[in-house]
Image (tube, rainbow, N blue to C red; front, side):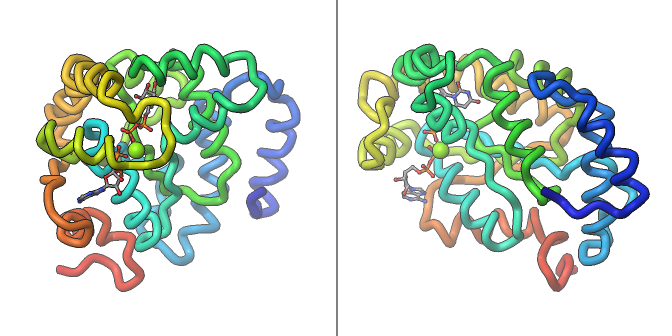
Length: 243
Ligand SMILES: Nc1ncnc2c1ncn2[C@@H]1O[C@H](COP(=O)(O)OP(=O)(O)O)[C@@H](O)[C@H]1O
Ligand SMILES: O=c1ccn([C@@H]2O[C@H](COP(=O)(O)OP(=O)(O)O)[C@@H](O)[C@H]2O)c(=O)[nH]1
Ligand SMILES: [Mg+2]
C-alpha cells in the first residue's frame, strides 16, 4: 500500500492490525498514516516536512459548474488525487452493498446522502492512496456534512475552491452532459439547485469567513478557467511557486 520507513512501520502496522476493519480510522491512526507518507514525500515536496495530515482541497459549486472537469486538470497538472464524492457514491450505489437503494433514491431526488456513508467512502479512498494531497470534489454539501467530516476525519481543508456559475449555464451543461446519469434531467437538476442554494452555499460562507475560499468564475473555456485555478496550486508545481 505505501512504503514505510522502518521505525514508523513498526509503530503503524500493529496499529492497523488492531483496528477492526469496520471501525473508521480515529484521528490518531489517520494522522499516523500521513506521518508515514509525509516523511516519504518530503523528499520531493519540501513544503510538508512538518505536516501530519493530508493536504485537502474541497472543490465546491453547483451542479454543472465544472468541478469534475477542473479537478481532472488540477490532478493531472499537480499530481493530486481527485476524489469525486458523487462518483464514490455512484460506485457504492451499484455495488451489492446495503445502502445501494437508498443512495440511488437520494441521487435521483437530488438529496444529500447521510454524511457517515459519504465520509466512510472518502476516508477509505484516502486510506488506500499512496498520495497525501487530495481534491475532494462535490463535498461537503451541507453544514452537517462539514461538521461530520471534521468530527470523523479530524482535519479541516487547506483550501476551498468555489466555482461560481449562472444557473442557466449550469442547467445547460448538466442537460448536455450525456453520462447517462439518473440525476441529469430537468426535474432533478431543479431540486439539486434548490439544495445548492439552501445547503451547499452555507458551507461556502462558513469557509469564506475563515478566509479559505477561492471563488472562481466558472464561465469561459476550460483553459481560461484553469488559468485562474493554477496559481492556487503553484506550491505543488515541480518548479515551485512562481513569485
Ligand atoms: N468551462 C466549461 N464550459 C462549457 N462546458 C463545460 C465547462 N466545464 C465543464 N463543462 C461541461 O459541463 C458538464 C459539467 O461539467 P462537470 O465538470 O461534470 O461539472 P460538475 O462536476 O460541477 O457537475 C460536462 O459535460 C463538462 O464537459
Ligand atoms: O457529498 C456528496 C456528494 C454527492 N451527493 C449526491 O450525489 C449527487 C451527485 O453529486 P455530484 O457531485 O456527482 O454532482 P455534480 O455536481 O458533479 O453534477 C448529488 O446531487 C447528491 O445527491 C451526496 O449526497 N453527497
Ligand atoms: Mg461533478
